[in-house]
Image (tube, rainbow, N blue to C red; front, top):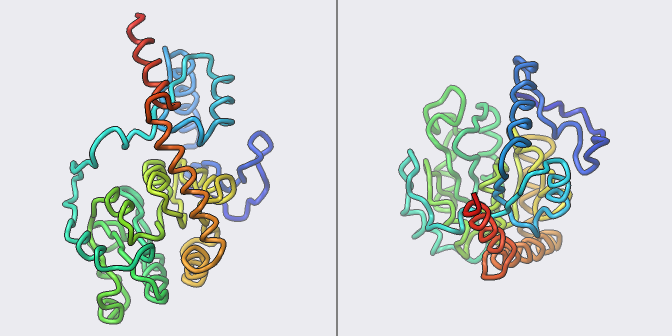
Length: 294
């Protein structure tokens, strides 16, 4: 998959999105088109659709879906709020990092994680490192083994990087993300814009810096930046100057405070949706009644 960074025109059918946000397939686009077509056919032929979202977050989009897919639709999300934080990761979580977070001032730590699948180039990895080094903020950086192309772990770090950042920065292979986002010291989430990570950040009221990689991530990042206005999309990719400016905008500028206010309102709406009588709570009861009717 690849994005065409030069395609800035808005999509006629979806004016909130730009052409470069849409999926493009470098290998076998016809096969992918067939896959999507078959998925849509199966969705329309199904008995119902369950969505990991809450009504208040995407109400216009959900209305469009209900018009296009004439089957019952149930918004039950955020899914992760129904259960305790999962510890089933294939990568061991570094729980010691919570103790380090406990020593940091409120809302100051830049939490950086690009998920469990995305991979980045060596040069991109180094730009991330320099950007985090150049900021005055403490940071927690998740670098899972194999994330950097051509490296087993952090061999590509700039020379003496760890010595220069000292105790201000921590690099781990994996961590309990929900706990990190919920920690009072976490002030910003630099993310790949996966949907689960985005919902987790919304539910903890943490503004985002978005570096989408593939699939739905560019679309999610566009919504974070342009629609919900709760984060910043890095349109120029992994560039240390642009990254540094984004970190400053969120952590030091008035714009960042406004983002924090907006995402705090969404956090409240997410919590209310799960309460008795809330939109997701009602939808769950409707799903139970619907299944029981068969």
